[in-house]
Image (cartoon, rainbow, N blue to C red; front, side):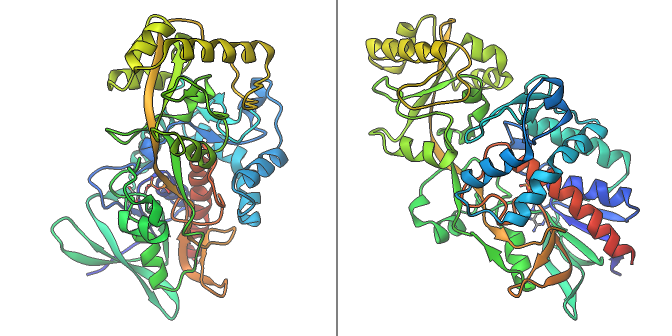
Length: 448
Ligand code: ADP
C-alpha cells in the first residue's frame, strides 16, 4: 500500500535538509529520500562559507555592507545573466537565512571574502573550518531532534502527477524494489550535474577530460525528472570550472586560502592574474599557461588563519620550505623569480595597491613568515548554474511560466540565480535561503 506524506523531499544536501526542517516545523509530515548511502550531498564538500549582506555578524565586526552592493556584485559576477527577481529575493532573504541557521545552532559568525566581492561577507564557522561539514552536521542534529524520516540508498525515479498536479513519487530502494509515496508537495533538492560527464559534455564539449570536484551523486537526475512533468530549464550551458583543484584527488583547494592572502604563481615563478577575480576568469588564465596549471602559494600567517590549510597538509597536497628559496627548489622553480615575485607582491601589500594585476581585496599581509607553502592546482568542473526554472516561491515553472502545482525546487537543481558564473559563498546561501522557502511553501500547500 502506498505511504502518505504531506511533503516528500528529494535529496539530503543543504537545500533538502533545510526544507525538511522548515516543512516539519510548519506542521507537515515529511520524508527525505536520498539515493546515496550517506546524508549531505555535495553540500558536505562546501568549503568557503555563506554570503550575506547586512547581517548581525557583520555588524558585530564593524563591517559596513549593503544588500544593494551584494546584488550588484553578484549580478556583475554572473555577467548580468542572473534572473533579477530570484537574485533580489536571494539578497533580501540572506541575512534572515544566516539568523535561521544561528537559531538552529549553526552559527556562522566569522567572516571572510571570495572572488568578485569587494567586502567581507562570506560567513563561516568561528573556528574558520570548512562550512560544509559544519552545516550538514548541524542540520542533521535538527533532523534527528524532529524525528524526520530519512530513507538512504533510495532514489526517486519519477514524480507522479494527476491533472497537472503532483500526487507523489515513485521510489526505488537498494534492493531495486519500487513503491509509491503519496504527497501533495514534492521538493526537488537533488543538486547539480557536475559529476555527469555525458551531460556536462553535451552542453560544453570543451570540458571533456576535466576532473570534477563533485560527489558521485551529482548526476542531474532531478532536472530530468522535472522536465518529464513539464518543467522548463534555463542556462544549462553555464557550467563553472573552479580554478584551484588538486588534480590527483580532484580535491578543491578553497578560495578561503586566497581570501586569506595567498597568491597564484606560474611554474615560471610569476604571478599572472588578479587572484581575487571571479572563478571563470581565474580558470581561463590558468588554462592559458603553458603547463595549464599553477601553484597556490602562501606563508605561515595564512596557514594560521585558515583551518583548511592544515587539512591540505594532512592530505599530503602541500609542499613546503623554510624559506622562499627552499620552496622554489621543491617546486622546481627558478629561485630568483619566486623571490622577486614575493618581494614585489609584499610591496603591493604595504602600499595596498597591486600595480601589476589590480587585486583590490585580501591584500592581507606580506607573505614573509616561514615556512612557505605551495599546492599545485588546475581547474575542475565545479558547479552547474543552469537548471529548472522556479518563481520566487520556489514553485517549479513550465515553458509558459505557469506553476506545476505541488512541484518545488531549491538549491543547485535550480537555474537562473547565479547567471553565467556563481560567486564563491553564494551556493551555500542559495541552498539555505531557498531551502527554507521551499519547506514553508510546500508545507502550506500540503495542508490545504
Ligand atoms: P544542494 O547543494 O542543492 O542542496 P547537494 O548536491 O548538496 O545539493 O544534495 C543533493 C542530494 O540529492 C545528493 O545527496 C544526491 O545524492 C541526492 N539525489 C540526487 N538525485 C536523487 C534522486 N533521484 N533520488 C534521491 N536522491 C537524489
